[in-house]
Length: 331
Image (cartoon, rainbow, N blue to C red):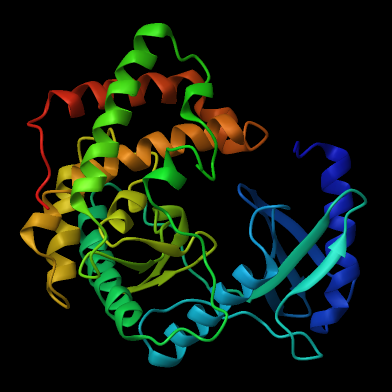
């Protein structure tokens, strides 16, 4: 799928036609914010603001989207995390569909939350400590929450992250990947497969997680941090939430400080055993290779276009260091 001008025109027209479902004038101000897994719009209408997410076709089913919204609502009701709620339509539903001329699209509107992405390097350790405590509360909620009947989200394990059933494609298709680089990544692939199997999926380390709490999905204002975009939430390792939180900056020198701050924050609200903390570098490498596959399979997005061969080379460098580290992950 390519987000060319013709498709964006159709998507924008579809969103405008759907706006009255939320009681919004179809002529309201509409701004495209991002194109990533989905297309996201900001709607301004007589002082009211909404965020409208147009889902990528043939990815999440309507049941999966409804399940995401059910968890968000449960988290909000429990006061576990600050996150925007889905805005009901005038009929009381949460999911709207429209035909863009080629595909059937699911659309959800969310409340607008003020804030900025935490991006100042000097502030990041402080915010990652805060993020760790949020993640600990979120995981505690996930362990205790009784999921509603029919709840269905994707499961993120080795086979669906890097293996034959990978949702985001094959890292081997990465732009600029040469023979030597592929050999390094194949070795990392094999080691990650063995180590994730040894780590296992016991309930003390595996459950419902956000899976994408990177800085782009965090909004800070004053001392408050809000978490947005549960689109990738599903069943995976709790430690994987840290790996996802440093997406696209795994190579930065600040990462060890962020890891320590995140663990400190997490442990202030919930246990995070040392054996699981020692596994964090494994999950960081797993996530980095997953992102390499995502970039290869989402070449039409601005993020993928900006990364290209540079991200591929960086991933090979990280894999080289990973393979050189002491082998073995505590189970």
